[in-house]
Length: 454
Image (spheres, rainbow, N blue to C red):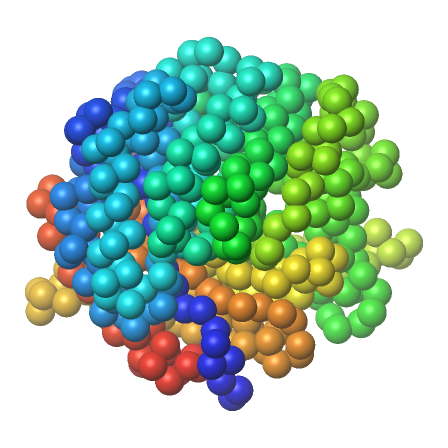
């Protein structure tokens, strides 16, 4: 099969709260995830991210693991409350020193840092002042972005503002499954959505002003549909499913157009999108100008897709899953076609280069008696998905890179330590790292620049 382009970006992803640990070390203050995880029953087995992977104390060890893959990029997020313990104002030198070490350690090994400003760990002190419901919250985020860009912008050339706003908006403020664990009325959730998008725009402005001529994007969920057949009607049904209809129930907050249309086009979807549009709060017209600051790339996290076909009147219909469809340990269906159709349809609509900023799977992994970690299901998952990504590139889709989730097994939010996504197994009692078979497989793929079975 065709190779990936020579300039293709190969990377891995992680996030601060999921790997760093050191939750109360060197001036860091709690985030909403520290608070939520402390509530009994919120996280499986009453676990928290207090230790996580202990990456705060293993900077060089983890950088060696990243570099050992042969990747040319590593995507990671920053802890807002490690940088600004009060959420704004006083800067924590020790926190910035830590991120200096992370950045410099990667660069010393020939790996470019790709920094995400926000991966869900909102400072508790700002949540106590209203969080995203506070009209000042976008300005708070802009100040944080300015501090970070001023310190790291001489070395970090690629930035993402928000990771998966659908999750911290919908799961955090509507469904109550993620921190801060709220079940707000939809009108209030839409306020959170809108303020977070304004915050995205403020951050883009701050990065442009302080970090020079760097590449700035974001990393939303890619809510992906793929057509039942290659008939034009089914392809159009997949397109409509992704961009022209709002999912019902709590799922309304998992959407592409409701988030991306304001960012890319400077407008929300019109009333045909669904009743949710009528509940979008009134806001100053200048907000959309801020939200739609030009970005350089469309990062997208895709793990699965929904198979759809055109109904009698062309309306998208979900095709029922076949009995026994393969599923990951997250109970997500294995649908490699999502990595063809997701980036293809997103690139067609938004006319930006696409980076797959997360893709991977949770499997049942443990250290075998031979001392190795054998994860053939993960290798097969990755192989199938990357073949589809290569096909999309062959068909002319402007896909510039792929970041595998994740380099390490980590704290998987409400599931605690029960779901393992990593290329490297982590013993969460000792912090010991053991590269899995998939680590060697990904290293071989990068060396040859094309998928190849182990």
